[in-house]
Length: 405
Ligand SMILES: Nc1ncnc2c1ncn2[C@@H]1O[C@H](COP(=O)(O)OP(=O)(O)O)[C@@H](O)[C@H]1O
Ligand SMILES: [Mg+2]
Image (cartoon, rainbow, N blue to C red; front, side, top):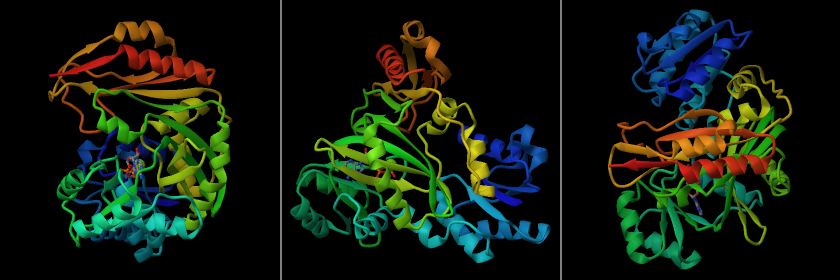
């Protein structure tokens, strides 16, 4: 197999993805398209890849130039792969130009454009929030007339909960439209506000058929975390799949089918309302963030990045059964400052939950404030039972306090 992998920069996730692809046997040619120069490629991988630097991996014509160069060199390219949400459409565009198998542009757009995604799901009879694309104040007020406050306003193809706003009144609506620069050429996605517990649902499809699934809890949901900077944040991966998640599975599969998914590891977010009704929030055709890849790796005692690489290149998937409950606690800095001034409670957290911690990146004094809701550090726990994992997460978030100043 001749594979081109796009890793714009070598973040921890980018490194894991690159490492997994270099380990995959049966890959005879591995091209690495990246923003970084050769000397920034992790040294252990330099000899395993053919390096090609471009300035903008999101630019389809630059990407096309790079992949076409590999094709000329190798006589063909069999797979073009990337893990980043924003890359899915440009990757699909280049695949279609060069006749490389993989997700098409139309399917990639279904997963990227929140409005189109929900339109497709609604047409398939699946439960989604009512929505509209806002182009100005008039269209915004018309939507509010239809669904009432509160609503959520966000970028139509956002990621990482950035610029996602809850709007509860007309003055807040005006502020949100200004903040997102809403105009006819720059519309915003508006949705009725769904009040419920938020979960993820990870699914593997091969050739249009589901072969594996998993579900996690967000504690609490990302928007609540963003609205409350003092709050710590956890994601829990239970050892046994909860009944409510099992019951949601047919909806998840029907949604992926409606969107036209062929082969991928997908990451869905969904709500469970107090009434028991479930609502699909959004779904991405790429591996999940919020540390879910390491959480699943620890839970199943195998490397999910390697599994993903094998899936994307050879359309094969096999993971051993889950052995552990896992979870991650995100340590979020409190206060107005831009720098971590102190980290309190580490010893108490270690005493209470240290045995369960299997990986960590602790916040350090002097490090800058994070611009993501995942905060300044994290710890991953693993336990034999789900209640034990919950107890360990609680011990971590109730003891550790990151002071900004
Ligand atoms: N319609 C909605 N009702 C309630 N909360 C929502 C709604 N849409 C988004 N949110 C909240 O905002 C977060 C980010 O929105 P999402 O659509 O997932 O965007 P992103 O692509 O940035 O992850 C969600 O995880 C959820 O907590
Ligand atoms: Mg999301």
